[in-house]
Length: 258
Picture 1 (tube, rainbow, N blue to C red):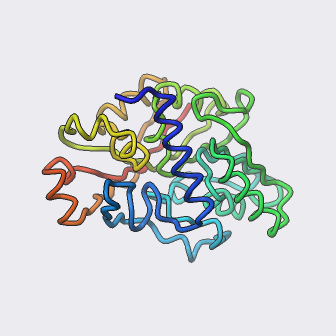
Picture 2: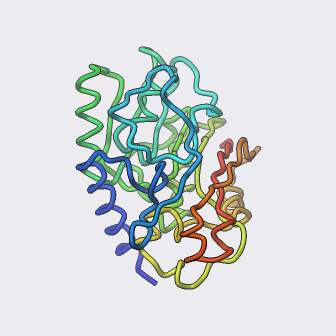
Picture 3: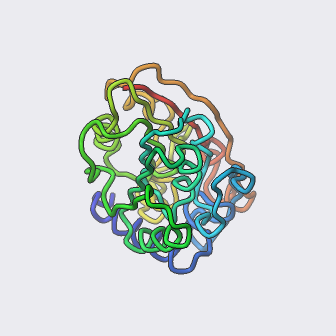
């Protein structure tokens, strides 16, 4: 099995490539999931195009849900988006918080931060900020956020316990997170577990749904609720290569309170 640092390097490399190409053919996007030989599958990605604040240049097709839909963001909130990419969810959240609030995007890939900053430069928002940083060590102070969102990113983090502990740390007392993420039902083959490339593609890094929710519960979050579940439909070609397990891949959108 690859070490956590090796996995991070693979993920960084993949997302740097996506940022530079702007193809949107990454992790949980509409066509590809970094599978060997570029096998593709279709993900039920939610449509952002009709949302207030939507910026086409920021939408690289990397999400597996629409966390802002269930995040309960209010005018004036401070929102943190983990794994913010080119800024897709950040700009949607900015439309909700208005001039009175603030939205901070955090991403570990410098190329994504550059792309997000370029997008924000065109928009001229002075209450949007993008920070380079690791989700296992978020570069923000304690108790800063009213809402934390994330879209198909926490499944990419090797230490999910640490990631959710960091989410808990940066949230204000009584505040909450809303994340969309990939989980699995059924046993994963050892080959899939060992593949760092599949980790970068959301598969190998995904946990069993019960295990994922248990980590959130063990981080002392309360009122944990799955707001939405979507089954990920895979191509017949991909299913034939990877067996029955891959029929059990889902996107869930989860809320929890500090």
